[in-house]
Image (cartoon, rainbow, N blue to C red):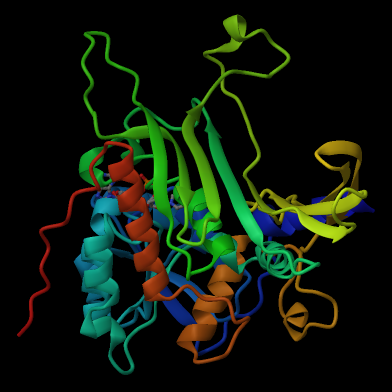
Amino acid sequence: MLFFDFVKRAYYAAVSPPTPTKRDDAIRIGLLGASTIAPLAVITPAKSHPEVIVAAVAARDRERARQYAKKHSIPIVHNTYQDLLDDPAIDAVYIALPNSLHYEWALRSIQAGKHVLLEKPSCSNAEEARKLFRHPLVTGPNAPVLLEAFHYQFHPAWQAFLYHVNHLPWGATVDHVYSQQYLPKGYLNKDDIRFKYGLSGGCLMDLATYPLSCVRQVLGRGEHLNPIEAMHRPLPVASDGSQVEPQIDVAIKATYATDSDKTAEIRGDLLYGGGPSILPASWSHSLPSFKWPMTEARSGEILLSGQGNEERHFVQRKVTLWNHLIPTVYHRIDICDKHTIRRGEEIVKTWDVMEHLKAYNWPAGDVRAQTYQEWWTTWRCQLEEFVNRIKGRAGSGVWIDGEESIAQMEAIDETYIQAGLNARPTSAFEIATE
Ligand SMILES: NC(=O)c1ccc[n+]([C@@H]2O[C@H](COP(=O)([O-])OP(=O)(O)OC[C@H]3O[C@@H](n4cnc5c(N)ncnc54)[C@H](OP(=O)(O)O)[C@@H]3O)[C@@H](O)[C@H]2O)c1
């Protein structure tokens, strides 16, 4: 049964989603860039959404855009990104350009009156994010919808994890959170946009922006993350010993403390190697390696009973979400209560009580579970809420507002500075105002 459910979810999510008839008032989305991520993030999710049509694409090279349009059955090909924005038949755009172009094209799109689904990270740095999300064109009445595409937050698994983290028993609260995301070595090409500082690349600007976002979500908006230590691994040096992109972090590890003494740690790696752990390191250091995306929140120890020199019973809760990134295929929420009996400082006994949960949909009885489907990917959930917002509907209640996107960029900048690197460069683009 479990295997059958897995196959059904994977088939509908990735191979052949149900394709309902499109409604007359469907939102017509245009793609800026013939990007690698668009099929996963928008093109496939749109197939199962009755209110979304992927109507157009523009790329720097028209022939490339034409081939992309043919492959993905996109009816309109525009010669330039601006031509797509000037097309009155387009209601919304999906921006999956290099990070250095997010600010400019998001502003241009908003100025053209298009709703914007903007890939993460929203901008190159916090200065750009403040200028974008606080721009009168974005904050004014009837402004188009602008959403940073942190898709994982829209999935019920992440929301179930947050629920358990925010509802700890015994009056406990989270005092430490850890999150990691790794990409096996060899997955990305050497000339990938992620390895170029001029395109606002770097691990923290890409893969590790997730762990940073995850720990910020768990600790909540009120907690500012002060970086304590941040270390990065640079690109491997060229054969002549030169370092062509000295500002690029291929991997990053950072620890933080908040003003209320909570702590956090993130780790990310775009070129994770080391091979299977069963092989000796000397054999496998150049092989790719894999680790699940994971976020873990831990409470402090709580005294349940006992006092003074008598036996005292303590408990500490740890809530872990395995695979916050692609939970539709597989995820697991572990709730582990570590019990300890102490006499004075001596540990008399310890034991763990474990519970394992899944959340492919909202809880049974929750009205949202009637709309959402177990096979919906994080990107399909995100598209649902993007459309709900455009249509003025309440939706699931999950949303990422501009101030949250600004706070995320501020955390990225501060981490880079702690790591001895520069925040990514600011775009020279200025919006023309009549
Ligand atoms: N949400 C997610 O899970 C997720 C996953 C991966 C990536 N992303 C984000 O999505 C964005 C794109 O990532 P991707 O992996 O799809 O990258 P990609 O395949 O390299 O696509 C980038 C697009 O930008 C266009 N582009 C415009 N100017 C460019 C320049 N100077 N150099 C290179 N490309 C340029 C490209 O060309 P054309 O105009 O010719 O098409 C291409 O279509 C990034 O912001 C990334 O962080 C998000």
